[in-house]
Image 1 (tube, one colour):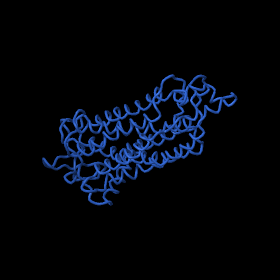
Image 2 (image 1 turned 90 degrees about the vertical axis):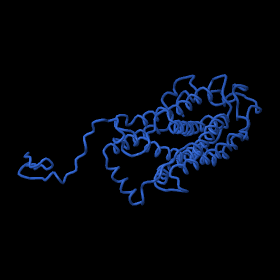
Image 3 (image 1 turned 90 degrees about the horizontal axis):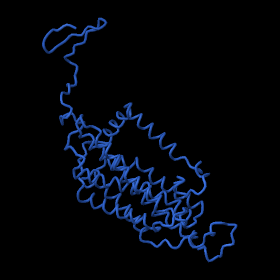
Image 4 (image 1 turned 135 degrees about the vertical axis):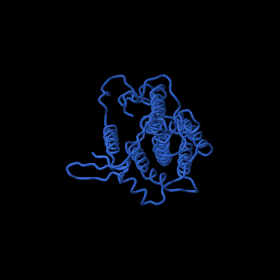
Length: 337
């Protein structure tokens, strides 16, 4: 390499000369904590800030709805109300249909502005749908179980001579009513989660190089608390004999809906009053598509998509788990949910 001037170099590689004065070089980052190293401009959202706490609460609420309500297909509709296989299968498909719209709402929340809001409108809409749906189930009397083994220990044994008074033959007919509100509560949760994903990306883009990824990692930890809470509630609160377990204590059949209603109500208030929305910097849909295509060509994005696909594929395998051959294991502890 030969130096011609202080600002211009001639590189001779395999007899090919390139004038580097026309090449743009990225500046060397001397301080990784410099705010200029952030991917996007904006105020840094610290882990203990008000914006972060609002985001955490909504993430926990959405995670609880996503993980707790599908488990009720077994606890309430299969065992407690003794619903038919057809009705229980309909619940699974309705929940899948609702969450399949997550990608579509992620697009509209990322691009479409309504009343000057980008994410806030969709967050509020999602929480309103979730509250209205889960509220109808939380405050509706679910009725008595089809059979309560705590009162009639042999009622689930078809070979036992159990009195007809042990059975509520109308209970299976009450299952069908819950299909519509179940679909819409999952639809509202899908809208919320799609918007929260976009908010998390925005917050992460504001982090300088030295702490990049910290907010995302902590957010996954916080959202995991909602998942753990739903799992512990199912294991310890829904393991009485009337739910398919063998514990002497349990929560009421509507408690899960009441908890979901309270969490959704708190999240709605926070979304309306404390959530700070951002302006959309994308001017046209074609610009959004072009940026999406560039993003999809990134190797890291391809690896993430492949991991999520394989994780969901093996996680969603259905059928009787191997662990159910163990005796004296309740439905919840055998991981059928």
